[in-house]
Image (tube, rainbow, N blue to C red; front, top):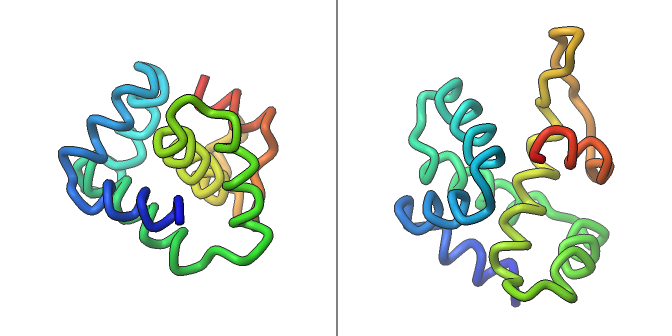
Length: 116
């Protein structure tokens, strides 16, 4: 299962950080900001987010993950990005300065704005 493979890869902080770095500078910078706020390294933070997603994912979350990775050249990286974007939606900072508490899924527009 793809989620298991993602979780296994992200259990190693250096691998998780390299994966995020390969997803682009802006995305890495955004995740680095969130990980610093949590007082964690990027790799540890990503691993924590992926493990949390794996524990909490419902059937529709897994369907969304599969859809997000179905045509990707690198499904593990696409899956990591999807998981982080979806999970970060729960506490994304908006221009108003307020935290948003929401449930899955993140809109693709919001994910693009936050991680582009």
